[in-house]
Image (cartoon, one colour):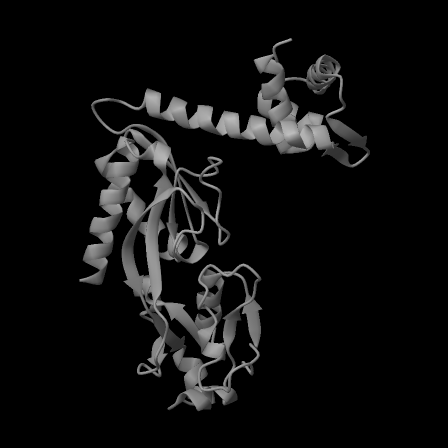
Length: 297
């Protein structure tokens, strides 16, 4: 018996949402209609797909197996649909771009107006997440990563190299003094990135410079957002190493220890093979490369 596409679409929505009610809101169906579709699919397959709990739905082992396949199929269909509907004359349609919160909020977002003025038929979705979204599963179309891509089978292009600036506010440095060498940081309050999934592997290098290996300084504050670290520095809380792609956002701060040997941040533009011929991807890539070249000149 062939599987019913409508029922698979409902199953996919329920598995994503974790409840009949939320899936119904997404599909514009009633909760009871969604429940009936899932029940019919389970009867057709003769296996339960969900464990029903008071707090929601959990996929059974059979449900997990079906979900993996359905998720991949719907991701490929969405990608194919986007490519087929793209205008032959001009880039058009939605482009989902993901990058880190720091780069996206401070560097990329202020430049998007210029891109959309050039390509008004493109609609951008900007997904800021310090974890890597899965491009193969269509969580985003393209990514700007602050490290070499870890996913296999992605097209990648190195687009920029960034450094760091160790910064503090005038008010903080007047109170705490200006460090003259790395060892002086022991006497300062440091604001560091505090999460198990940092956006840049080297982001907390300041806590280790001038220290014996394995004895990093403790941060006065740990926060899992580079824009929040910037605001904390501005408030006079302490010192932080901030990526220099923040550009003018750092102008009201004072740079200290400019001669410290800091790691470099290697930025890559990446996208799946299926998007190789997308005009939206091509023009966004060219725009990004041109903007980064102008920024670095």
